[in-house]
Amino acid sequence: MPNHDFDIAILGGGPAGSALALLLARQTRRPERIALLQSDANTLYGHAPDVDPRVLALNQGSRVMLEAVGGWPDEAAPIRTIHVSQRGRLGRAVIQNTDFSVPQLGSVVRYAGLHASLAHAVAASGVRVMTGPAARIDGQDSQGVDLAQGDLVLRARVAVQADGSPTGPALREYQQVALITTARASQPREGWAFERFTREGPLAILPHPGGAGLQSVVWCSAPERAQALKALTPVALSEALTEAFGTRLGSLTIQAPVAAFPLTLNLRKDITVGRTVAIGNALQTLHPVAGQGLNLGLRDTAMLAAALRQWQTDPNADPSGALVQFARLRRPDRTLTAALTDLLSRGFATRCSAVDHLGGLALLALDLSPSLRAPLARHLLQGLRF
Image (cartoon, rainbow, N blue to C red; front, side, top):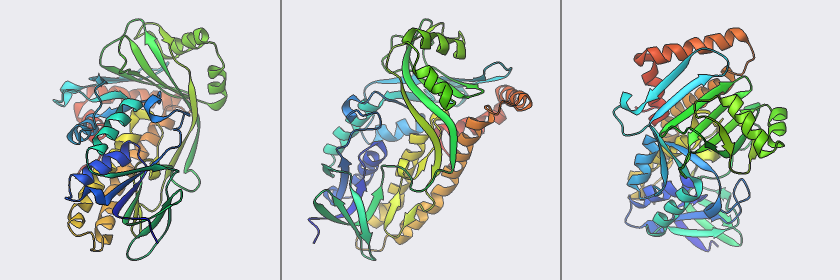
């Protein structure tokens, strides 16, 4: 027999799972019927959430949603201008917040700060938070889902997988490794984010929420090149980074250890199975170019909460219709976003001069034509909307 019974159980207490818990809690008079099952395991880089060194790029749509549920952190670096270019070729595009009459295009936040803000909001929401070993789904029937977290046995009418990665082989192995670190710019430009395409992969330089000229670095390259870069001394790596990026920010000096992880594209085939549904990283793993991963996951949460709003008034009803509707509505946005990041990650790394020149012409066209630039920028800002 289950030790606990809930209307909704969310497996994973990361940003997507926590944001979903907050949205669902606002829609019911019984938030204690929502369970957020957190894992006490360390995060990707071996750090607990409160000291996780990662930073996250969130678009303006994500910020608005997180502010609405009380989960926005105090410390954030604004992005008001995005500069896109390719190394060694002509063509660039500049996107500014004034083009869309928004205060900013996005923000960069610390993972630890975002996690703390969301955790604080969840603790005050009435949602039941349960921390222990990673929770798992043990089975389901027409009435609900059986779950376990360590020795605890749970039952929920709907289960949401919000953590982990899609099961099965990757759709694409990019043969790229992302190096993540922090650098200090000698000539920082407040509010500017740069995406520079190289023949081995994109290089992103983003404003860091720590301020004082700090920049977040996401440097994608071939595995052999990444291994060689990671082995360099901080001084040598700083010189290599400045040479690869250019002098738009002056010299770049490495300020933190370098983390590395291989890049893949993976999309879960079935968004919903019976009374279970996946969101965020459990639903898709994307290339980090253009910083779309968490933004896409937060759009999953917003649409799932909207789909379940009516069902929450009568949890004894069959949720199948709401879950099927959610899956149908999410497919276009996740398909387009995955295709866009896939194209950007590979299109400028073909090592073919003709393709490089075409890419440069495309950037030039985007820069000169607001009518071409606007649809792409809007999708990066808020995803595909209906």
